[in-house]
Amino acid sequence: MAQAQENEIIEQIELGLELYQEQDYGGAITELEFAINDLRKLVSGRIASTFPEAPEGWTASEAESESASGAGAAAMMGGGGTTLQRQYRQEGGNASLEASLMIDNPMIQAMAGILNNPAMMAAQPNTERVRIGRESAMVKWESDRARAEVTLLLDGRILMQVKGQNLESQDVAVDLLKAWDIDAVREQAAR
Image (tube, rainbow, N blue to C red):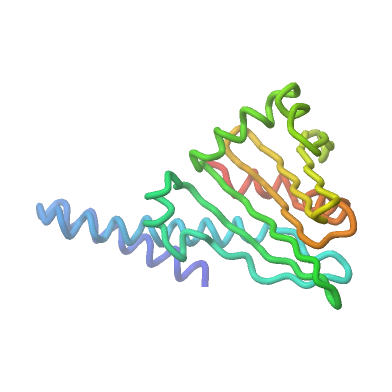
C-alpha cells in the first residue's frame, strides 16, 4: 500500500511539473497541493507506527492524525505541523490515557520555555522532573483529580505527551511514555 501511495505522489508531482511547464499554474498548484497532502498522510502513517503498544490490562485504538479531521481549523487556531494521537482504555476500569505527538507546531515553542528551564518547571504546581532515557520529562500529578500529564520535548520541535484520567497513580502514564521508541520518533520525524 505504501508503494502505491508513493507512486501516486510521484505521478502528482510529475503532472504538477508538466502543468507548470504548460503555464497552467492553477492546475499545477492543485496537483502539487494534492501531492503535499498525500505526502503528509504518508509521513503521518509512519510516525503513527512509533506509538507504544497498550500496557498489560489496557487496550489501544489506532493512532489518528488530527489534520485528517480538519487541517483548516488547526491552521486558524495557530496550529500547523503534524499532530497525532492514540487512545488507551483500561480493561474492566474507567481509566484512560491519551498519547499525543506534535511535530513542528508553533504551540511547541510555548511549552519549550517551561520544559527547558529547571526553575520554570519547578515553579509549576504538582510537577516533577523524570528521566526518560537521557531526556528530561515533566510529570504533573493531580492526586485529588486522579489525573496525570507527562510531557517530553525532543530536539526543540517534537512534543510527546501522555495524559491520563481516573488513574491510581502517575506511574502508568510515565511508563507509557517510557515505552515510546524515541529513536524511531526522531527517525520518522526527520526533516
